[in-house]
Amino acid sequence: MAKLKILEFPDPRLRTKAAPVEKVDDALRQLMDDMFETMYAAPGIGLAATQVDVHRRLLVADVSRDGSEPHALINPEIVEKDGVTATEEGCLSVPGYYEEVERAEHIRVRYLDRNGETAEMEAEGLLAVCIQHEMDHLDGKLFVDYLSEAKRMRIRKKLVKEQRHRSPEAVAL
Ligand code: NI
Image 1 (spheres, rainbow, N blue to C red):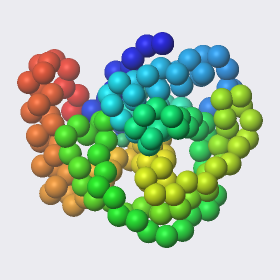
Image 2 (image 1 turned 180 degrees about the vertical axis):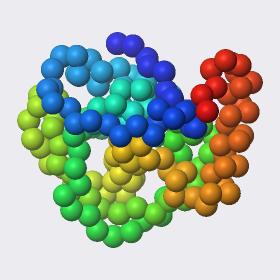
Image 3 (image 1 turned 30 degrees about the horizontal axis):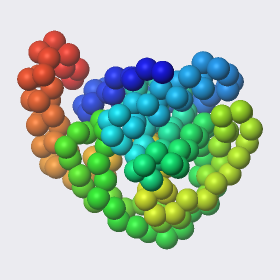
Image 4 (image 1 turned 135 degrees about the horizontal axis):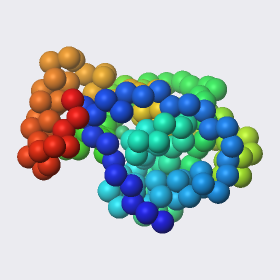
């Protein structure tokens, strides 16, 4: 297992639209395990492959906080949704910022599991919000996109400043 580097806003690679996974093989399962390790270590409750610079449709989530409810969804697709819930969201790619975002309260998702079998699950509350947030990442979308442009620019400015402070040549604009 290996911990992966998480891209941070405004890195343009976070804007990449991920391609569908065509084959669920050992390399993909390894990536999935590495993503779980990276997410738990961060710590976070969800991580999309886009955030670790792999542009394939794969996400992991665990909202239990004790590592007891891991979900790994390959090529996730929302087939049903209803209700509206507003949650204060954060993101491992936008460290230190939390803002309220509205999403569906209940979803049914179709996906491929670890063995490449088609599966479906229902999620509500925080897990539903988390899956929708991670699915946005796979389309190159971030939670800050739901905020006003002024607020997004303010966050961007502060993060770029912090990143420049950390490593002068690693800033990607
Ligand atoms: Ni995120």
